[in-house]
Structures are given as C-alpha cells and as structure tokens.
Length: 254
Image 1: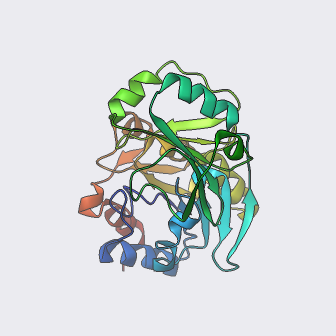
Image 2 (image 1 turned 45 degrees about the vertical axis):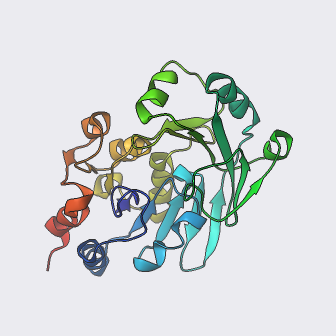
C-alpha cells in the first residue's frame, strides 16, 4: 500500500493527518497490509509525519532515498550532479532559487526560499559549493504561478535527470535519471515478493503519475489535476474529505 503524503494524507504543506485517515491506515496494517510512505519530501521532511503512522517503509525524494523506520536508517540513496540542471534553469527562469538535499540534515541553498519551503538546516552557498552529488534538487520560481512555470518548461529538455513540476506552487523537483516513485516501488515489491497486481497506490501530484500507473490499483485524489486523474484507475474524494480513508475502508473495514 503506497501512500503519498502532501495532498493525500495531509493538506499540502501540513503535517497533520486526520483521525479518520490514521485509523484507516492502522486497520489496514491489522489486516496485513504493508504500508509504504511514498513522497517527494526529503527524509527530514517526513520526520513529523512518519511517527504518526504504522509505516513499514518510507520512499522519500521521489524514490531516490529509502528509509527503514524500524532500523531508523537509510537503506538506499541514489545521487546525481545538479550543476548542469541548475545552469539550464537559471538561464530559462530568471529569479529562480535552488536547493540541494543533504539527506537527513537539510539543504544547501542558492538564493532565498520562502519561509516553510525547506525542511531541516539550510545553508546558503555559492554555485560551486552547491554543485555536489545530491538525491534531490528543488527549484522555486519566485513571484510566479504554477501555470507560468508549466508553460515556461513545456518544451524543456533536462538530460541526465528525472523531473516534475508541482500543480500548487511554481516548484520543480529533480532526482537522478530513471528514478521515480513507481520505479522504487517496483524494486521494493520485488524484494518483498509482493505482486504488483496486489499493490494499491494513492496520490495527487505529477510526481505520482508513475506510481499510479504502476500499481495494480492506482487511485488519484479528488483534487488532483486532470492529467493525474487520467492515469489512475479511479478517483477518490478530496483530501479535505478524507478521501484516502474512504478508499482504504472499502478494503480494510471492521
């Protein structure tokens, strides 16, 4: 059972999970479900959410960082060189700010993000100091809308990475090539000998598309944009209606 966090278990940017959603996930584990938190957040970013849930695994940074809650350790971490991507985006998007993840610590930042944008300790650095291997690069285009960003990058090619744009903020996330929530889940399920046909995934964002297409049952949240809903097998009620709980209760009620 693969669960996105922002927009699925919590309102975007919040760490608060409703009692109904917590109860539904707990019931699922009592029925034998393996719960995997699958998020674009960094490892530091899930620190306030993971303790609220009986998760067996966490896949962070859109698939680039795996964390085992029982062992409290990173079990896999994939990195890439963010330098070329930063240079390309700087030329295309004047005023953009960038941050590279320091797994388990925080971020190195090139420019000033908005309050609450980044998790953990943030250190302002130069481009040269920032161009170090990382699992996750994020970019905010300041004073721009999500629609403006989506239009600006509509024909953009960024070789050597996998990337997605957010539908609620002018925000881009880049991770190593061929890394996604879907690819990470496929590898994890193979290790656990779980059939893809038995996998349920719930999400709401562009970075959930591969995960929803991969799962035996992919469910998009009710507020998800049209292109995300289009790849899902079904659409749940919105996060404000505890849509994830309503889906889970169909399979794990009682």
